[in-house]
Image (cartoon, rainbow over all chains, first blue to last red; front, side):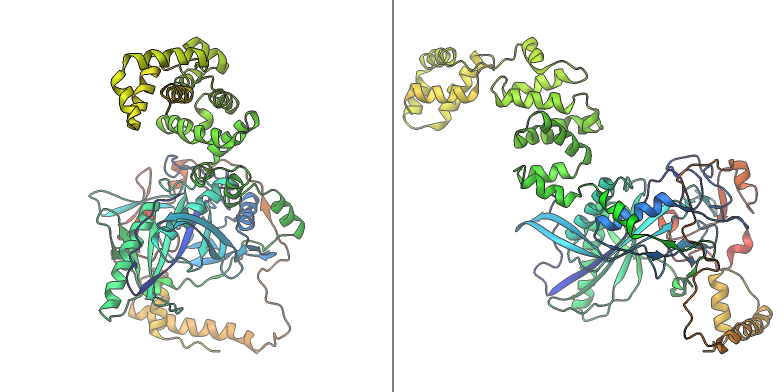
Length: 491
Length: 119
């Protein structure tokens, strides 16, 4: 669950109203309207052609995969998919926009309505909320401007120009920075589950603009809002909202009015500043794109897309907690990592004690993959072998503690659990008579602590258990040791 | 409905198009705009009550392509028609404010108005 952020409106007579516009780059192989490769990090201006450079006479052609994926995202969010949709030109001049217009969608977007179910933890427990969507439309990304050092010029790289971009517009349904953060994280997860985008904020494949206003608590009126553009990390979104909500509350508390404006967030200083720009710059003069034919989604097509949807995060979360009986924490950790969740489910095919497997996957497997910066599938132990190890722990063949050594020894090879345990000499001893002998020996050696236990000092039991464990070189089953120590002392 | 073509309207369109115009140009453009609008305005005399709005001039739909990568231009060729380049990037007058992360929909922000003459 996302870490709780403080709500700046707490204890004030105000409520914040927040809406998000997210831009998600689709990871199609080629661009939206031409065959140039869609790839981050290539040498500048090498993934360009007459179409994405906006050369006269060149004509765009729609990438079918991008259309399908846009509809797929819409279906996953419960949107109404337009049976008839079209593209429009959004006209504005900027150096990263070679044609002088962006091909976007104006009045007939691919998806209308829909909602995203988010969950997050705060002081009152786990909160589940549905955030409404206004629309989702498809457009093309712009190029990238780079500011030359010490020269009165800027440089433009058009590799990104024409990359398919989904714009997802939420309703102003959010009221706290943490809700906005949870919403954005869930959007990202939905894209990862659908396999349509990497949503990597560092590489800019997920970007976000936020709209914020503040109103008296209990009011349903929408007041003058400001917009913060280009937030490129989850933390920046939350921090920028905190700052802007606080700023607006101070202005309102003084009885002054909020000025509608576009702001930029400075993450270094943690504050927003006004983006210079004329109001008239927002006059985009949209008109239907004459170079692209309209688009029709047939009922059959939409149905086949609907049927091909994978299990979505909110549903999986419910299943993990309900049918599999996982704790909310473990279910949440697994659902947030697609590969780890798959690893977990594959392990269950070998050993079906879900909570035991989940404990290991979310602790040891996750630690290993985080430490090495690779996914759970790449750490060098198959889900089936990991499941075998968890089973061995549950069956008392190796202690939970020593199992970590076994785990390490199983990485990067295909050896069976029992063989590794045997070779490392880590078989757990669960034999009662053997352990009872060791317990008696320890009791004989430590009369002091034994007296303490009899006087009611619980801690001394742990000391005696520790001594038995030490004597058995950690191999004795700690549960049985404890049971026998208590038996022998009659407590 | 008729649009009144004023100096302000023409200047507004010129600024949006990032075209620098002089006072003399302005007079001429106002009259051009008026004539163009009057010409197109003749369409207004038609009765379109029962006509479906048209979005596209030909009756085709779903003209698309497979998601397949094709060869791009080499860099030399891609920069060849640029007014100014440095061999790697297109070079433009310095942009202030929003910048590279601005992305689609960013307001127009150049250091000087009418800077297109500099290229």
